[in-house]
Each structure stands twice: as C-alpha cells, then as structure tokens.
Length: 117
Ligand code: SF4
Image (tube, rainbow, N blue to C red; front, side, top):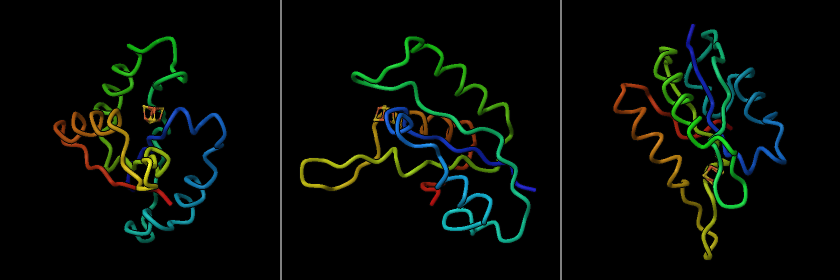
C-alpha cells in the first residue's frame, strides 16, 4: 500500500471539485499509473492558502499543513496541474508558492511527483 497526498491551487479549487485528480488516483491512471496495481491510500487532498485576491484569512495555517505532511509518512505528494499557471506567452510555470512548499517537503525527505492526471 502506498500513502499519497495531493496538493492543489486554492484559486482553482473555487471552480474545481477535484474529480479529475480523484479519478486518476482511483483508476491508477496518468501520474498514478507508476504504482501499478498496488493499493493507494489518499492521506490528504489539500490546497495552498492562496494569493492575490484569493487568500485565506489564516495565512499562518499553511505551516500547520506543511508540518502535517511531514508527519504522514507519505510515499509521495502529487502536485496537481492546476498549480501551473500560464504566463503572457501562454507557457505554463509552476506557481512560486508551490515551489517553496515543495522545496521544504523535499528537504524533509518527501518524494514529490509533478502531476496527477
Ligand atoms: S499561491 Fe499559487 S497555487 Fe496558491 S492560489 Fe495562488 S496561484 Fe494558486
């Protein structure tokens, strides 16, 4: 059994139910195909705490979530595609806030997989 979590964009979550990520997880499709037939346990599906006009009041709460990830003994944290935003030329880049979260979690030994579906 593999323990995985999914991190997504708060802004996107305003209009996304997360169904695509969950379908890929339960069907072992796309980024989850790497686990073969092994059972997957979704330990958390969380968002960043936002940016710009879409910010949660409790910005400090992100620390709590990051520490929780470290405690879950995950096999991998999957980063949803929604955390990649297009620039003026239409090229997608990973959000810098997510990059910073990833950096900290990688330093804590958590495997990061860029993508869900
Ligand atoms: S910080 Fe990045 S991932 Fe979070 S809401 Fe803003 S754009 Fe989305």
